Length: 97
Image (cartoon, rainbow, N blue to C red; front, side):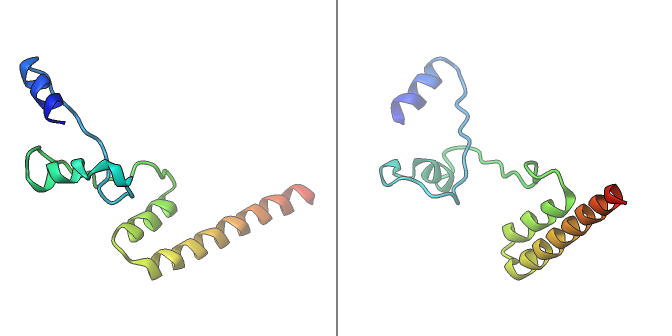
């Protein structure tokens, strides 16, 4: 890691690390990414916007999970799935009539 940082300085280049400290890491990783953040050896930017889920219902579920509102996330998940099943049934019923 030190060699990489030294080489980037010599080349007047930037190193961009992308990751999630909350994800599981391998034992050999040594938590370098987390160490760099904790020691403030690098500027850290936190992404707050949910971009993977496009459906607003699913975004609300993921937001609750990220805020550790587990009961609420399960309630929303159940309601969302029931709603989507009901809409599918209604579409099928419309095609069969």
